Image (cartoon, rainbow, N blue to C red; front, side, top):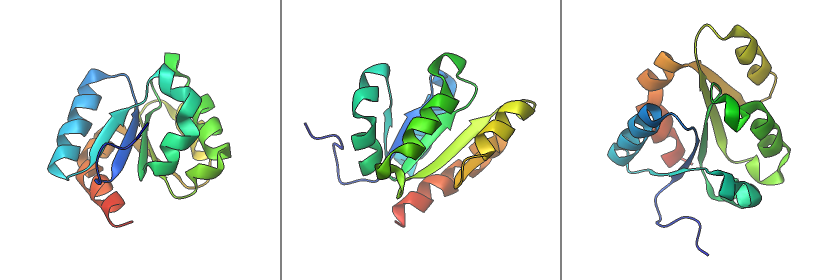
Amino acid sequence: MKLNQSDKPLALLYCDDLIFVSKISIAARESDVETRVITNTDLDSIEELVGIAGLLIIDLNADHLKPIEFIHRVVDSSTSRDTKIVCFVSHIDHERIKEAERFDGIAVLPRSKFIDQLSGILEGIKQV
């Protein structure tokens, strides 16, 4: 099974908010970056997926996805070293921001700042 369908850089989305998935997908198309939403069926092969992705975008407010547990799993994986991880979260969710910032090398942005910087974030994985 080929996990990346093209030679374009791959950004994985751990997000269930359709508005954000849509905004990210549109920006990715404009930046010539492929996106893939991670589903529960992907969790068994997450190490493989992260290993081929240049970027992992995580919605920290997707409570039922258990994003902090997911970050633990990804960061503990040896395949995550070359993958940039960017999280977005409501600016008033101070506890969750602190919890995610404990992980080394992970960017945590308020939702509005994430959207403002999205094009640059996507362009950044093309440089790798």
